Image (cartoon, rainbow, N blue to C red; front, side):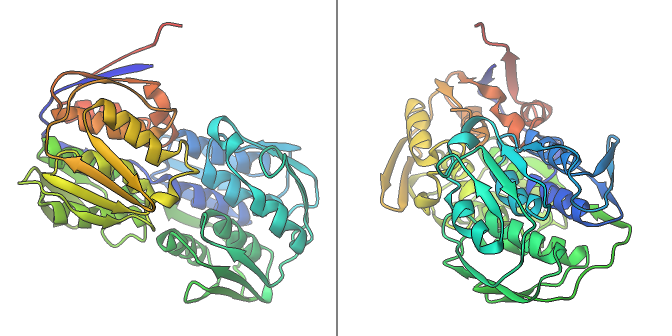
Length: 425
Protein backbone atom coordinates (compact mmCIF):
# COMPACT_ATOMS: atom_id res chain seq x y z
CA UNK A 1 0.00 0.00 0.00
CA UNK A 2 1.21 3.49 -0.87
CA UNK A 3 0.16 6.46 1.24
CA UNK A 4 0.93 10.03 0.18
CA UNK A 5 0.84 12.92 2.64
CA UNK A 6 0.87 16.51 1.44
CA UNK A 7 1.92 19.51 3.51
CA UNK A 8 -1.00 20.14 5.86
CA UNK A 9 -2.20 22.16 8.82
CA UNK A 10 -4.14 20.31 11.50
CA UNK A 11 -6.96 21.36 13.76
CA UNK A 12 -9.78 19.69 15.63
CA UNK A 13 -10.23 16.92 18.15
CA UNK A 14 -9.62 13.17 18.10
CA UNK A 15 -9.86 10.29 20.57
CA UNK A 16 -6.64 8.40 21.25
CA UNK A 17 -6.56 4.75 20.14
CA UNK A 18 -6.84 1.88 22.62
CA UNK A 19 -3.56 0.73 24.13
CA UNK A 20 -2.40 -2.61 22.76
CA UNK A 21 -0.15 -2.99 25.81
CA UNK A 22 -3.22 -2.70 28.04
CA UNK A 23 -5.44 -4.74 25.70
CA UNK A 24 -3.09 -7.71 25.36
CA UNK A 25 -2.52 -7.90 29.12
CA UNK A 26 -6.29 -7.78 29.61
CA UNK A 27 -6.65 -10.72 27.20
CA UNK A 28 -4.09 -12.72 29.18
CA UNK A 29 -5.81 -11.92 32.47
CA UNK A 30 -9.23 -12.80 31.05
CA UNK A 31 -7.91 -16.18 29.92
CA UNK A 32 -6.52 -16.91 33.39
CA UNK A 33 -9.62 -15.62 35.21
CA UNK A 34 -11.83 -18.71 35.41
CA UNK A 35 -15.05 -16.78 34.99
CA UNK A 36 -16.41 -14.13 32.61
CA UNK A 37 -14.47 -10.95 31.91
CA UNK A 38 -15.98 -7.92 30.19
CA UNK A 39 -13.46 -5.69 28.42
CA UNK A 40 -14.49 -2.15 27.53
CA UNK A 41 -12.78 0.01 24.87
CA UNK A 42 -11.08 -3.03 23.27
CA UNK A 43 -8.44 -2.46 20.62
CA UNK A 44 -8.63 -3.84 17.10
CA UNK A 45 -5.04 -3.66 15.88
CA UNK A 46 -3.37 -6.71 14.36
CA UNK A 47 -1.56 -7.36 17.65
CA UNK A 48 -4.85 -7.20 19.55
CA UNK A 49 -6.46 -9.63 17.10
CA UNK A 50 -3.50 -11.97 17.48
CA UNK A 51 -3.91 -11.94 21.28
CA UNK A 52 -7.60 -12.80 20.95
CA UNK A 53 -6.70 -15.62 18.57
CA UNK A 54 -4.21 -17.01 21.09
CA UNK A 55 -6.62 -17.05 24.02
CA UNK A 56 -9.31 -18.64 21.88
CA UNK A 57 -6.88 -21.39 20.86
CA UNK A 58 -6.17 -21.87 24.58
CA UNK A 59 -9.84 -22.38 25.41
CA UNK A 60 -11.41 -18.97 25.97
CA UNK A 61 -14.77 -18.15 24.39
CA UNK A 62 -14.84 -14.62 22.96
CA UNK A 63 -18.00 -12.68 22.14
CA UNK A 64 -17.22 -9.43 20.36
CA UNK A 65 -19.22 -6.26 19.79
CA UNK A 66 -18.15 -2.82 18.62
CA UNK A 67 -17.06 -1.41 21.98
CA UNK A 68 -17.11 -4.37 24.34
CA UNK A 69 -15.71 -7.91 24.58
CA UNK A 70 -16.99 -10.72 26.75
CA UNK A 71 -14.49 -13.49 27.46
CA UNK A 72 -15.56 -16.68 29.21
CA UNK A 73 -12.74 -18.92 30.39
CA UNK A 74 -12.04 -22.00 32.47
CA UNK A 75 -8.30 -21.32 32.48
CA UNK A 76 -5.71 -22.62 30.04
CA UNK A 77 -7.50 -25.52 28.34
CA UNK A 78 -6.04 -25.71 24.82
CA UNK A 79 -8.53 -26.65 22.13
CA UNK A 80 -5.86 -26.56 19.45
CA UNK A 81 -2.33 -27.92 19.17
CA UNK A 82 -0.90 -24.66 17.81
CA UNK A 83 -1.11 -20.91 18.37
CA UNK A 84 0.06 -18.00 16.22
CA UNK A 85 1.17 -14.72 17.81
CA UNK A 86 1.22 -12.80 14.52
CA UNK A 87 3.97 -10.17 14.61
CA UNK A 88 3.51 -9.33 18.29
CA UNK A 89 6.71 -9.34 20.34
CA UNK A 90 4.69 -8.85 23.52
CA UNK A 91 2.35 -11.65 22.44
CA UNK A 92 5.03 -14.32 22.04
CA UNK A 93 7.00 -13.35 25.14
CA UNK A 94 3.95 -12.95 27.38
CA UNK A 95 1.88 -15.91 26.20
CA UNK A 96 4.68 -18.51 26.06
CA UNK A 97 4.85 -18.94 29.88
CA UNK A 98 1.04 -18.90 30.02
CA UNK A 99 0.84 -21.61 27.36
CA UNK A 100 3.25 -23.63 29.51
CA UNK A 101 0.60 -23.90 32.25
CA UNK A 102 -0.86 -26.72 30.15
CA UNK A 103 0.57 -30.23 30.06
CA UNK A 104 -0.28 -30.55 26.37
CA UNK A 105 2.45 -29.92 23.77
CA UNK A 106 1.64 -26.69 21.92
CA UNK A 107 3.34 -25.36 18.81
CA UNK A 108 3.93 -21.59 18.90
CA UNK A 109 4.57 -19.61 15.75
CA UNK A 110 4.50 -16.06 14.46
CA UNK A 111 4.80 -14.00 11.30
CA UNK A 112 6.99 -11.39 9.65
CA UNK A 113 9.83 -9.90 11.65
CA UNK A 114 8.87 -11.96 14.72
CA UNK A 115 10.42 -14.99 13.01
CA UNK A 116 13.86 -13.37 13.17
CA UNK A 117 13.75 -12.07 16.73
CA UNK A 118 15.92 -13.89 19.30
CA UNK A 119 14.03 -16.04 21.81
CA UNK A 120 17.01 -17.66 23.56
CA UNK A 121 15.57 -16.91 26.99
CA UNK A 122 12.93 -19.61 26.50
CA UNK A 123 15.62 -22.26 25.99
CA UNK A 124 17.49 -20.99 29.05
CA UNK A 125 14.67 -20.45 31.55
CA UNK A 126 11.91 -22.93 30.68
CA UNK A 127 13.86 -26.11 31.59
CA UNK A 128 14.40 -24.62 35.07
CA UNK A 129 10.61 -24.58 35.46
CA UNK A 130 10.01 -28.14 34.33
CA UNK A 131 8.94 -27.04 30.86
CA UNK A 132 10.00 -28.91 27.75
CA UNK A 133 10.87 -26.47 24.98
CA UNK A 134 12.12 -27.03 21.45
CA UNK A 135 13.10 -23.96 19.43
CA UNK A 136 14.62 -23.17 16.07
CA UNK A 137 18.07 -22.26 17.42
CA UNK A 138 16.57 -19.70 19.76
CA UNK A 139 13.96 -18.53 17.28
CA UNK A 140 10.43 -19.44 16.24
CA UNK A 141 8.76 -21.83 15.81
CA UNK A 142 8.67 -23.23 19.35
CA UNK A 143 7.09 -26.28 20.88
CA UNK A 144 6.22 -25.93 24.55
CA UNK A 145 4.98 -28.54 26.99
CA UNK A 146 4.28 -27.91 30.67
CA UNK A 147 2.99 -27.80 33.23
CA UNK A 148 5.07 -24.90 34.50
CA UNK A 149 6.37 -25.49 38.04
CA UNK A 150 6.97 -22.14 39.80
CA UNK A 151 10.45 -21.96 41.31
CA UNK A 152 12.78 -19.20 42.40
CA UNK A 153 14.76 -18.18 39.32
CA UNK A 154 16.91 -15.31 38.06
CA UNK A 155 16.42 -13.71 34.65
CA UNK A 156 18.11 -10.98 32.62
CA UNK A 157 15.82 -8.00 32.20
CA UNK A 158 18.10 -5.96 29.93
CA UNK A 159 16.67 -7.06 26.56
CA UNK A 160 12.95 -6.94 27.26
CA UNK A 161 10.49 -6.78 30.14
CA UNK A 162 7.88 -8.71 28.15
CA UNK A 163 9.08 -12.19 29.15
CA UNK A 164 8.93 -11.11 32.80
CA UNK A 165 5.33 -10.02 32.20
CA UNK A 166 4.46 -13.51 30.99
CA UNK A 167 6.20 -15.16 33.95
CA UNK A 168 4.36 -12.90 36.40
CA UNK A 169 1.01 -13.88 34.89
CA UNK A 170 1.89 -17.57 34.79
CA UNK A 171 3.29 -17.74 38.34
CA UNK A 172 0.23 -15.92 39.70
CA UNK A 173 -2.20 -18.23 37.88
CA UNK A 174 -0.24 -21.31 38.95
CA UNK A 175 -0.61 -20.35 42.60
CA UNK A 176 3.11 -19.81 43.18
CA UNK A 177 3.91 -19.76 46.90
CA UNK A 178 7.12 -18.81 48.67
CA UNK A 179 9.07 -18.31 45.43
CA UNK A 180 10.55 -15.31 43.63
CA UNK A 181 11.48 -14.15 40.17
CA UNK A 182 14.77 -12.29 40.54
CA UNK A 183 15.64 -9.81 37.79
CA UNK A 184 18.97 -8.31 36.80
CA UNK A 185 19.16 -4.94 35.01
CA UNK A 186 15.45 -4.56 34.31
CA UNK A 187 14.56 -2.17 31.49
CA UNK A 188 11.13 -0.69 30.73
CA UNK A 189 10.01 -0.63 34.35
CA UNK A 190 6.79 1.26 33.52
CA UNK A 191 5.61 -1.73 31.46
CA UNK A 192 6.05 -3.94 34.52
CA UNK A 193 4.04 -1.39 36.51
CA UNK A 194 1.25 -1.85 33.95
CA UNK A 195 1.49 -5.64 34.31
CA UNK A 196 1.33 -5.41 38.09
CA UNK A 197 -1.67 -3.06 37.86
CA UNK A 198 -3.55 -5.57 35.68
CA UNK A 199 -2.67 -8.46 38.01
CA UNK A 200 -3.89 -6.48 41.01
CA UNK A 201 -7.08 -5.50 39.18
CA UNK A 202 -7.86 -9.19 38.67
CA UNK A 203 -7.02 -10.04 42.29
CA UNK A 204 -3.53 -11.56 42.06
CA UNK A 205 -0.94 -10.48 44.61
CA UNK A 206 2.71 -9.98 43.68
CA UNK A 207 5.20 -8.22 45.93
CA UNK A 208 7.55 -5.92 43.96
CA UNK A 209 10.85 -5.65 45.80
CA UNK A 210 12.47 -2.67 44.08
CA UNK A 211 12.16 -4.26 40.61
CA UNK A 212 14.93 -6.69 41.56
CA UNK A 213 12.71 -9.42 42.96
CA UNK A 214 9.04 -10.29 42.56
CA UNK A 215 7.80 -12.44 45.43
CA UNK A 216 4.72 -14.67 45.46
CA UNK A 217 3.23 -15.38 48.88
CA UNK A 218 0.58 -17.75 47.56
CA UNK A 219 -2.31 -15.31 47.77
CA UNK A 220 -4.36 -16.14 44.72
CA UNK A 221 -7.35 -14.56 43.06
CA UNK A 222 -10.84 -15.93 43.47
CA UNK A 223 -12.48 -16.72 40.16
CA UNK A 224 -15.22 -14.14 39.66
CA UNK A 225 -16.79 -12.10 36.91
CA UNK A 226 -14.73 -8.98 36.32
CA UNK A 227 -14.62 -5.89 34.12
CA UNK A 228 -11.63 -4.07 32.69
CA UNK A 229 -11.40 -0.89 30.62
CA UNK A 230 -8.52 -0.68 28.16
CA UNK A 231 -6.57 2.56 28.52
CA UNK A 232 -6.02 5.10 25.79
CA UNK A 233 -2.67 4.43 24.11
CA UNK A 234 0.24 6.75 24.85
CA UNK A 235 2.34 4.95 22.20
CA UNK A 236 -0.04 5.79 19.37
CA UNK A 237 -1.11 9.01 21.04
CA UNK A 238 2.51 10.19 20.99
CA UNK A 239 2.33 10.46 17.20
CA UNK A 240 -0.85 12.54 17.40
CA UNK A 241 0.71 14.81 20.01
CA UNK A 242 3.86 15.32 17.93
CA UNK A 243 1.66 15.98 14.88
CA UNK A 244 -0.06 18.70 16.90
CA UNK A 245 3.27 20.21 17.94
CA UNK A 246 4.41 20.31 14.31
CA UNK A 247 1.24 21.19 12.43
CA UNK A 248 -1.53 21.85 14.99
CA UNK A 249 -3.09 22.92 17.23
CA UNK A 250 -5.11 19.78 17.97
CA UNK A 251 -6.94 18.27 20.93
CA UNK A 252 -6.36 14.64 21.91
CA UNK A 253 -8.82 12.98 24.30
CA UNK A 254 -8.61 9.78 26.32
CA UNK A 255 -4.98 9.80 27.51
CA UNK A 256 -4.64 9.34 31.26
CA UNK A 257 -1.73 11.35 32.67
CA UNK A 258 -1.78 9.05 35.73
CA UNK A 259 -1.19 5.98 33.53
CA UNK A 260 1.76 3.66 34.18
CA UNK A 261 2.41 3.42 30.42
CA UNK A 262 6.04 4.20 29.67
CA UNK A 263 5.29 6.34 26.63
CA UNK A 264 3.52 8.95 28.76
CA UNK A 265 7.06 10.36 28.95
CA UNK A 266 6.42 12.03 25.57
CA UNK A 267 4.90 14.88 27.60
CA UNK A 268 8.31 15.74 29.03
CA UNK A 269 9.90 15.88 25.58
CA UNK A 270 7.11 18.12 24.27
CA UNK A 271 7.52 20.41 27.27
CA UNK A 272 11.30 20.53 26.90
CA UNK A 273 11.19 21.40 23.19
CA UNK A 274 8.82 24.32 23.72
CA UNK A 275 5.56 23.00 22.28
CA UNK A 276 2.46 24.82 23.50
CA UNK A 277 0.46 22.40 25.62
CA UNK A 278 -2.35 22.38 28.17
CA UNK A 279 -3.62 19.35 30.08
CA UNK A 280 -7.17 19.15 31.42
CA UNK A 281 -7.87 15.71 32.88
CA UNK A 282 -7.70 13.27 29.98
CA UNK A 283 -7.80 16.05 27.38
CA UNK A 284 -4.56 17.43 25.94
CA UNK A 285 -4.39 20.47 23.70
CA UNK A 286 -1.13 20.92 21.82
CA UNK A 287 0.20 23.26 19.17
CA UNK A 288 3.45 24.56 17.69
CA UNK A 289 5.76 26.81 19.66
CA UNK A 290 9.31 28.03 19.07
CA UNK A 291 10.57 24.45 18.91
CA UNK A 292 14.12 23.90 20.11
CA UNK A 293 16.40 20.88 20.46
CA UNK A 294 16.06 18.74 23.59
CA UNK A 295 17.81 15.88 25.41
CA UNK A 296 15.72 12.81 26.24
CA UNK A 297 16.49 9.40 27.73
CA UNK A 298 14.31 6.79 25.99
CA UNK A 299 15.91 3.74 27.63
CA UNK A 300 12.69 2.83 29.45
CA UNK A 301 10.42 3.90 26.57
CA UNK A 302 12.21 2.90 23.33
CA UNK A 303 8.97 2.96 21.32
CA UNK A 304 9.12 6.76 21.58
CA UNK A 305 12.19 6.98 19.33
CA UNK A 306 10.17 7.28 16.06
CA UNK A 307 7.84 10.12 17.19
CA UNK A 308 10.76 11.83 18.96
CA UNK A 309 12.77 11.81 15.73
CA UNK A 310 9.83 13.32 13.85
CA UNK A 311 9.60 16.02 16.52
CA UNK A 312 13.36 16.63 16.57
CA UNK A 313 13.37 17.18 12.80
CA UNK A 314 11.47 20.44 13.43
CA UNK A 315 13.42 21.53 16.52
CA UNK A 316 16.18 24.10 16.08
CA UNK A 317 19.55 22.54 16.95
CA UNK A 318 20.82 19.04 17.68
CA UNK A 319 18.50 16.82 19.72
CA UNK A 320 20.06 13.99 21.75
CA UNK A 321 18.12 10.78 22.46
CA UNK A 322 19.62 8.10 24.70
CA UNK A 323 18.74 4.39 24.61
CA UNK A 324 19.65 3.37 21.05
CA UNK A 325 20.72 -0.09 22.26
CA UNK A 326 17.03 -0.89 22.88
CA UNK A 327 16.21 -0.57 19.17
CA UNK A 328 18.00 -3.48 17.51
CA UNK A 329 15.31 -6.12 17.98
CA UNK A 330 12.13 -4.24 17.12
CA UNK A 331 10.08 -4.75 13.94
CA UNK A 332 13.14 -3.31 12.22
CA UNK A 333 16.51 -2.22 13.55
CA UNK A 334 14.95 1.14 14.32
CA UNK A 335 18.10 3.15 14.87
CA UNK A 336 19.38 2.36 11.38
CA UNK A 337 15.90 2.51 9.83
CA UNK A 338 15.21 5.98 11.23
CA UNK A 339 18.61 7.14 10.04
CA UNK A 340 17.94 5.82 6.52
CA UNK A 341 14.36 6.99 6.01
CA UNK A 342 14.70 10.41 7.63
CA UNK A 343 17.92 10.83 5.66
CA UNK A 344 15.76 10.68 2.53
CA UNK A 345 13.77 13.58 3.99
CA UNK A 346 16.93 15.63 4.48
CA UNK A 347 17.39 14.99 8.21
CA UNK A 348 20.87 14.04 9.40
CA UNK A 349 20.88 11.43 12.17
CA UNK A 350 24.08 10.22 13.82
CA UNK A 351 24.32 7.08 15.93
CA UNK A 352 27.15 6.97 18.45
CA UNK A 353 27.06 4.13 20.96
CA UNK A 354 23.83 4.31 22.94
CA UNK A 355 23.08 7.85 21.75
CA UNK A 356 21.26 9.31 18.74
CA UNK A 357 21.85 12.85 17.47
CA UNK A 358 19.18 14.46 15.27
CA UNK A 359 20.03 17.68 13.43
CA UNK A 360 16.80 19.64 13.21
CA UNK A 361 15.37 22.98 12.26
CA UNK A 362 16.92 23.06 8.78
CA UNK A 363 13.79 22.07 6.88
CA UNK A 364 12.22 18.74 5.98
CA UNK A 365 11.68 17.69 2.38
CA UNK A 366 9.08 15.32 1.00
CA UNK A 367 10.43 12.03 -0.29
CA UNK A 368 9.64 8.45 -1.20
CA UNK A 369 10.21 6.49 2.01
CA UNK A 370 9.66 2.90 3.12
CA UNK A 371 8.13 1.61 6.36
CA UNK A 372 10.42 -1.44 6.51
CA UNK A 373 7.20 -3.19 7.55
CA UNK A 374 7.50 -1.33 10.87
CA UNK A 375 4.33 0.42 12.07
CA UNK A 376 6.15 3.10 14.05
CA UNK A 377 8.45 4.00 11.15
CA UNK A 378 5.41 4.49 8.89
CA UNK A 379 3.73 6.74 11.44
CA UNK A 380 6.90 8.73 12.12
CA UNK A 381 7.38 9.45 8.41
CA UNK A 382 3.72 10.44 8.07
CA UNK A 383 3.96 12.91 10.96
CA UNK A 384 7.22 14.40 9.65
CA UNK A 385 5.57 14.80 6.24
CA UNK A 386 2.91 17.18 7.59
CA UNK A 387 5.06 20.31 7.25
CA UNK A 388 7.61 19.01 4.74
CA UNK A 389 8.35 20.80 1.51
CA UNK A 390 6.74 18.60 -1.14
CA UNK A 391 4.78 15.38 -0.94
CA UNK A 392 5.88 12.30 0.99
CA UNK A 393 4.89 8.80 -0.15
CA UNK A 394 5.24 5.86 2.22
CA UNK A 395 5.73 2.40 0.75
CA UNK A 396 4.26 -0.56 2.69
CA UNK A 397 2.21 2.02 4.55
CA UNK A 398 -0.19 -0.66 5.83
CA UNK A 399 2.37 -1.52 8.51
CA UNK A 400 0.33 0.74 10.82
CA UNK A 401 -2.27 -2.02 11.13
CA UNK A 402 -0.03 -3.74 13.67
CA UNK A 403 -0.84 -1.17 16.35
CA UNK A 404 -2.97 1.72 15.04
CA UNK A 405 -5.08 0.81 11.99
CA UNK A 406 -7.06 4.09 12.17
CA UNK A 407 -3.98 6.31 12.11
CA UNK A 408 -4.25 7.72 8.56
CA UNK A 409 -8.00 8.16 8.98
CA UNK A 410 -7.45 10.07 12.22
CA UNK A 411 -4.92 12.36 10.52
CA UNK A 412 -7.49 13.05 7.81
CA UNK A 413 -10.12 13.86 10.43
CA UNK A 414 -7.71 16.45 11.82
CA UNK A 415 -7.32 18.01 8.37
CA UNK A 416 -4.30 16.25 6.85
CA UNK A 417 -4.20 15.56 3.13
CA UNK A 418 -3.75 11.79 3.01
CA UNK A 419 -4.18 9.68 -0.13
CA UNK A 420 -3.87 5.93 -0.02
CA UNK A 421 -3.81 3.43 -2.88
CA UNK A 422 -2.89 -0.19 -3.35
CA UNK A 423 0.59 -0.64 -4.83
CA UNK A 424 0.82 -2.32 -8.20
CA UNK A 425 2.47 -5.76 -8.07
